[in-house]
Length: 254
Length: 82
Image 1: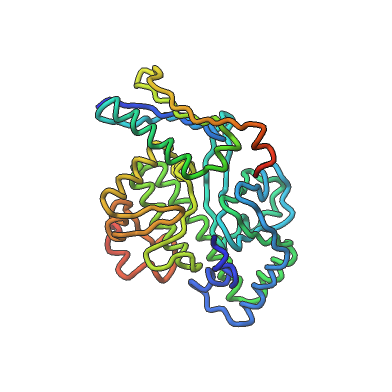
Image 2 (image 1 turned 60 degrees about the vertical axis):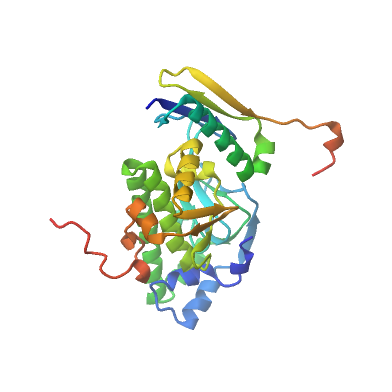
């Protein structure tokens, strides 16, 4: 359902958020897209305990970082959109400490570490852009940690939607106020540490307040400023030009 | 307001440690049923592959109040259908 955006390299679109990439850089990045595999919805790209031999770059669809607990429950610790790497330097590690699962039918590029290294050091702009991407991944994990630790259920769900809108827009998956969010309420719960019932309630609260509209895999943000207010969303951590001017004003000093 | 706990079993198990406050018991039951409805809408294929699913509602003392069970059955006539 997201194939319309898979034509251009989403990695280039994402890195262009901050990097001034030359046509040559863009062509170099396209070299990563050789070994493209279709992963069906629910399919595993790499499992906990597997030895990573390739780097995975999402080209289409959504992928979740999953951690399974011994009691049969699970936590989603990251959502990967087109243009996101599953683990940029995974081959350095001996064994995966979590799994990567496709949440919808996905296209994933499998990249050899040597090829990645060639691309990574091909130009200063590309090297810096990859560092930005890695730091961005860490910043998102920090934001999720704050959500699970300190935000109310309503703010957690609202915050995730605010983040996804910025990230989706960067890779062309959001049109205006509407974005594709192919998450079930259960998966939303797994990503925010809430039960399905709690998520169901929070979605209804946001819908009844006419802040968002949810329909079959898509979310329309009706009142963006209200959604951001509920979430306490400060987009600074997404480190892009769209984070807006005057963002330092409401940061407490001292 | 009384606190209710909603434990779900699908292809994964989720234990509700925090619970959720609702004004009345009937509201808690209604909430569980509506969540079940949305779960089936969200993931009809996953449901068929991992049924039965359930939501168990308990009170603050841990006593089970209701169990909403979602299940289905296939007959031999459906064997060759996708």
